[in-house]
Image (cartoon, rainbow, N blue to C red; front, side, top):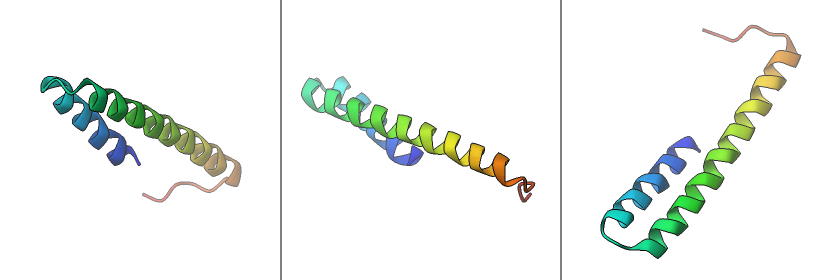
Length: 58
């Protein structure tokens, strides 16, 4: 999911450079949503792992 957020962020940067403000704004919004969903899943995963009590595999 973080990969998708980075992809949309790069699309937004390229669109902004070429002057496509509408596309850049939409891609930025999508990237922000995906990033925050990724962060939420990361926090949930870390909490679930801590509650399970198992050591992470190396």
